[in-house]
Length: 134
Ligand SMILES: [Zn+2]
Image (cartoon, rainbow, N blue to C red):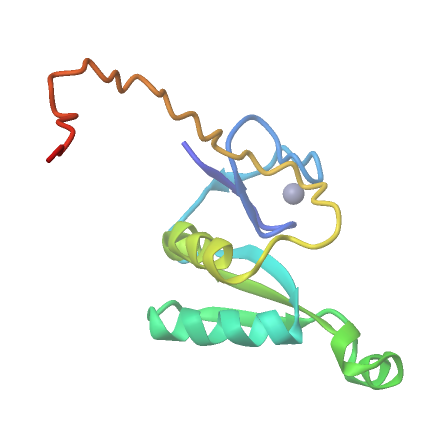
């Protein structure tokens, strides 16, 4: 069962929220808003476009206030994206496709499925290597 921490906007599995340690979590619902990713406005803009294309509703939240972004430069402005739990996995797939890599240390400890390709394809030469000689 996936639980949802409405403090961190994070779905999680286990007894308590891995981010804030909160135990009072309820079961995640399809319409729970979940934190997706934080991007600068360039990647964020591309991501937003892709989400729209895929019909994924999202909420964008500027991390810095508009005034601060103005001072520090537009590129330093970061935007956080939230999507509904029911589309979270789809949205994450899009993030991996679009955004090169999560910049900055990812301390959230997202579980990553290890890609273990069992290379058990054995080539038992069945004579397909016919050399075309003249
Ligand atoms: Zn939490």
